[in-house]
Image 1: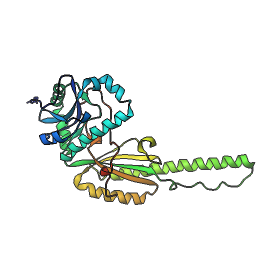
Image 2: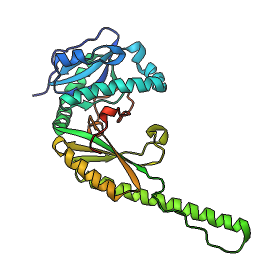
Image 3: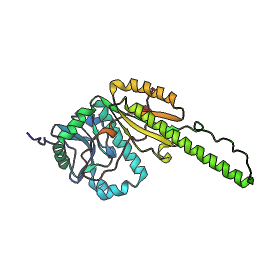
Image 4: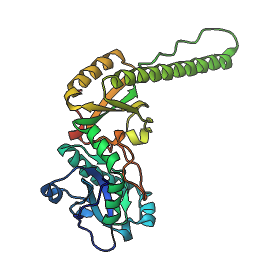
Length: 288
């Protein structure tokens, strides 16, 4: 029997789109009332096919396709909006499994979103089943200055000052390349070991220093889906691995909603990817 849409629970008015935060099996009315969405308004649920999509009602005049295209180029707006979006998803994840939506996933109205839930019910339900009792943890690895091979003194030889400079420069470049190779191999080994302890793992592209805020280059940006019962074991393994690899500094973050381990969420309209917003102190682990 095919899934059918249930009566909508909405907070929408004419001309209001649905900014999707995430999809859950259900959400309590009290949770909705206490959760602040975009523009300081409470979120609401769009229920269909046994699922609940938690959304912020947003005016299409400010969140339609053209407006979003402009706003996504506005970094202060983007940061503020990403933090609110993440706060909603994070709150949902604390109550149970959630399929988080990409930032700026806006449906033209609640009815359209309900139809999408019906169409993708099997896919979304399977993802929620897979995420039950699990959470995402991140591990970032940074090159440790001075831990890579040092440049040896240039050998003496003829040729004058110019030749000596060239020899020193060649030695510096060789040492840098060797250091980069060692750090890259260490990062690959760390990821492989951590992935072996996880239900699933992803290795994302390293962040630029302007985004990471770190003084040294990032060589590992890993995400690991863990059973909640396996977090302590993962922490112990990470400490052991860190001792074995002084050439990179390992920084765990989390827990996070499973941003890295979901199927494509119901997003048929403008979307902008978001993954692991800048963590607050409360989201950094105590087991480092």
